[in-house]
Length: 351
Ligand code: NAI
Ligand code: MG
Image (cartoon, rainbow, N blue to C red):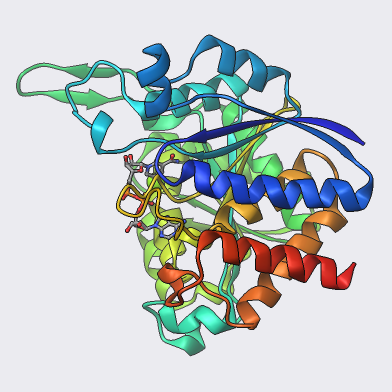
């Protein structure tokens, strides 16, 4: 198959980890006889420096025309003055909104070798295999904001249509996994949450083979620590999802391992590791590339329909971790290139 992939390396370790992900995609293309065309474009702080705009028009046009977008990370101390008019993350927020990617998928699995890095007791981590589906383009982050000297407001608004589409996505994904959805809200207090719960409940009738339960967000925050293996797909609104996904990420031992996909109804998906630009280690060749590599696997699965190739990459990452290859964030001393080479070697051993 032919595919156009827009690569947005961004800032800090972004270029290092996206290069690793691209090499794994090139390998998948070579072995499967696919033609992937890659092009690199600016986003974030480096785009502010070069074009005065964290999402230059050229970048946005190419992303909209691509089959998929692979992103590194944006931001860093050079652009973090809170009073600055343009900030790197504005570029990313706008890109997500422009692409209409309303469903943010974050799988969290705990590799047995890494359980010791988790703050939880090992026995609680056995079998943790979560898929968060976070609503990404609505809620408090996109609502109207007001500010006077002493009063500030952030509007939270959801429509049934916004809830329906993300809920459908979560139920559909649950069909390919454990057939269980947990919907998280604060329906005892918030009106938006009552609409959320009613709407998810209605969508559930379209998926009689998937079990649905509701949890309040405060209780879910606790359950993620006490019974993380008890959940399968967890669907929630933007702000709750932001917080719970970071909490769940801590279970896995390092931010550097975790991928994400952001999907809408259009053809373009956006794929990025969940970590930031890690300015403290940028440019030193020590960043963990596995989150970016696993994001590339999600790209193959969700945007290009190459599920077998995706599974092969995930299995190769598992074998690399089994073999004890680990970057510094995982307690080892492998560099970005060594870890990437180990994944490529594991892929080609089985080929
Ligand atoms: P961060 O994720 O960049 O780093 C947190 C800690 O984890 C650091 O000690 C870092 O060295 C380590 N780390 C992160 N990724 C790693 C990897 N792949 N391998 C090894 N170690 C890794 O989060 P932080 O420090 O809060 O933010 C730094 C910058 O990144 C800020 O400007 C922030 O705004 C931006 N950011 C961007 C995101 C994005 O582009 N989606 C997401 C989160 C933060
Ligand atoms: Mg976050």
